[in-house]
Length: 129
Image (cartoon, rainbow, N blue to C red; front, side, top):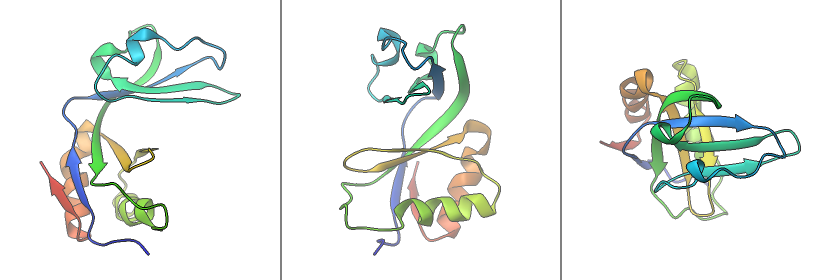
């Protein structure tokens, strides 16, 4: 069962979601920051890194802000992302989700960040500025 309410906090800075070829080497610029995510599939190398670190020449969606779900979260919990993404989807706020062993992160476009925080609070969650 999902714990409600969830507590989230904003990570400082802005983030970029980058896409490279599936066989591209892992670039040093993507993994130098305090927080980053790397996923390689047969189709792509997907990176989330500090916006300032992403070269302009790289295919990227820039201008994200990131919310970290307070964790660690037990693997037996269900509905964590649904509890967060459902109210955001109903409000028309797009998200990019990243999960780690301990917790989840939601990235929202910076221009929708204040709205996302309001929506999550209205859904009963705690958002720490």
